[in-house]
Image 1: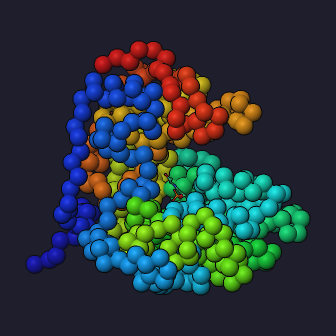
Image 2 (image 1 turned 45 degrees about the vertical axis):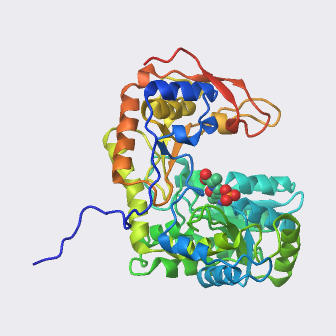
Image 3 (image 1 turned 60 degrees about the vertical axis):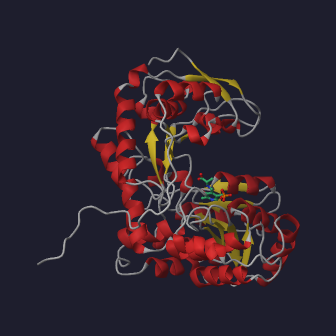
Length: 465
Ligand code: F0G
């Protein structure tokens, strides 16, 4: 007898608690979307069949996490749950000081309040929106230096999340002394399609930063997914455990910010971890003001317990193989059907190229928005437009259209199975087949900032069906 060499990568868990999905008809969905001002952010989640709005805080926890949560210590100061959390973060990241926060942006707020001042510049492979907002909130400049391959959304480069090392060298060499408080690396690179950063690139960027005595900081939200890509794509790492790879990544840095809602496998939580004693003291002082006492920092004891275990579960090889494979599997189906996507598929999401798919719609008619709404109407799927509605409005009120409208389909962790993914592919293909019938949208009401969350829109022509 020979053991099976399976072709199917099965979900590496059994499901012991289920949450029903409410089935809806086309007519119900049309009514719900119209009532939501044609804005999926305004939908009730129970009107969505497959919710791919974000992978943040939407994952399923394990029975071990739930068990640990029941046994949490909710003491205000010095809770045992905090020490378990601190030990886990230290074990994986190696940083001396662990400052819990209620989510990733709270860690960013504390960090940048303590290190950035007006006129500073903070280079990155690409800042996530909240990171950029916190940098800018301090009057500093958030500078994206993605590698050249990142700009070509169909180029199949293994590490399109990398930073442009030459550009980083130039920025640091030309900056006035004391105006670059940090170099930031986002792993994986969410703003560039969830693409990974290679260890070689992290090491080189870290060396450049150190040569200029500039702290090197990792935005670690999806550090485990990045470790998996290093293991499977970077020569020399194939035999290494994801946890070792993660430790090697963190050893290159002076600090990290983390949203535990992603690779912390929790519904809420985050942290800032760092080595510098004096900076840690300043951060803790601010934390008390905005988050809470430094041994809970905006989290309940049970949240600390969930993250302490979740960080290790995110590094489990079987889990990572299944996670990255589910996304790649959807990507393969879409490419086979001729649907344009960002390639290769990244760690947490598939990004559809709405501008290419709906090439009959001009950018000013918001093809990304139209595609995302069609996915909902046709199959009850909710993604998110990353394009002109999200980024087009300028501070002076003018409109600058995005070069390419994308729709991000982000996968919650351990929530959907292969049949959900098969269904998803069917929905996307069905939408593509009727693309000529899709109309654009116009905005009828919008807020001055972050308009995509609350804007009300209108289809430019009556919808068929
Ligand atoms: N950094 C990155 C790379 C992120 O993707 C996010 C959140 C944050 C920081 C902020 O963390 O939400 O816990 O405050 N990304 C979510 C998303 C919202 O949908 O991509 P947070």
